[in-house]
Image (cartoon, rainbow, N blue to C red; front, side, top):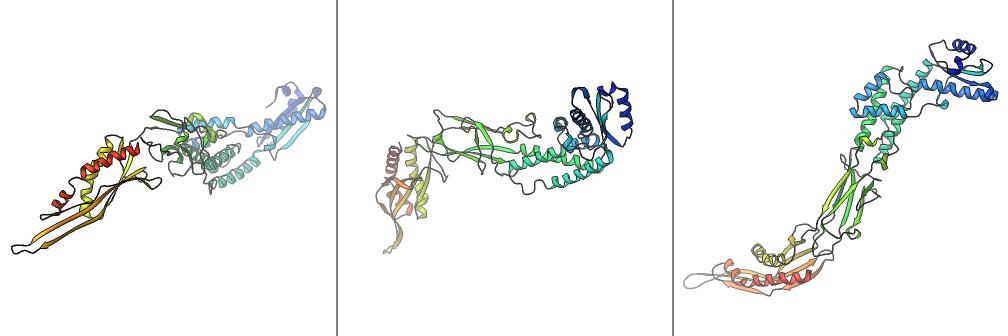
Length: 435
């Protein structure tokens, strides 16, 4: 326990042995050469050394049973990290030590001033147990009312540091020591789980389509995978979203026309550097966590075209799709288009049948009754821009009607005989409007 300076003086060694013989105390010893300092400076220097010497005995971190228990409650690859962290946290200073007494502070020889300080082990462990109990109560409630992803991480790291800085625990009540280690392990586990729960995704509000200059939103979202809660303040890097930060909804939104793209397909990649969120945390070590990433490839899609029928007659409604196919085939031959049931299509092809009449009656003759089937309608083809809700193309195909003495099907066949050509012509005209 003697420093090199003390060992040079038999008188100092004698005094030192006299004041450090009680094993129920820890002692701190400091010496200073008197000739190099004024007397008060020598006292200050020796006192500082003594407290630092005493501090080193109290700076033992998670030892023996506590360390083993802690490691059992967390991932195996985190135990090394705990040991590493315990050796890097700052040691105690004199401000962290209380209840010590100065056993000796005088010259112990002509050349040296010696200070001996003592701290009761029982008093220290009583204080430690009180401190640990208080911290465990706080740890149990540390995340109450803390919803923010960032704030939860901060709280976990804060209490991790406070637990690690509690000082020496070897010697306190075994049950309390185990509870301390379990609390520490729980903090590390929850911290790991949070950092492993970050999910980043990118999506378009609508496809990038051929033939039109649409401007969808491209949205990046950051959420916790298990709860789907947004992650605010997450910094991202990538070729489109670069050094931007998620908002309160956990998202970043750009309009596609803000993005400079010459050729398709376009690959959008994003990486969220975790260091930006937790880089100053004691609990964080980049070797244990990989940055969340996501990548999507955006290709131009065929123009999405919705279909709508405004036909109140069930029979005519059933037959209308066959005629509409002539219009669609004329469009498909000239453009990259496909029909869609999505509500976000830019255009809707609407087929209306106006002036619809369908009736039957029976004519009584001298021989036998004759059934008469009549059918009449005026097909109208409309192309509607859904963004403006305006009709950009309207084509009335004219009134068609027919009578049959056999069936409605026969009457319809007569009435619709020339419609395929008219529907096809309307499709060609729609292509001219769109292009």
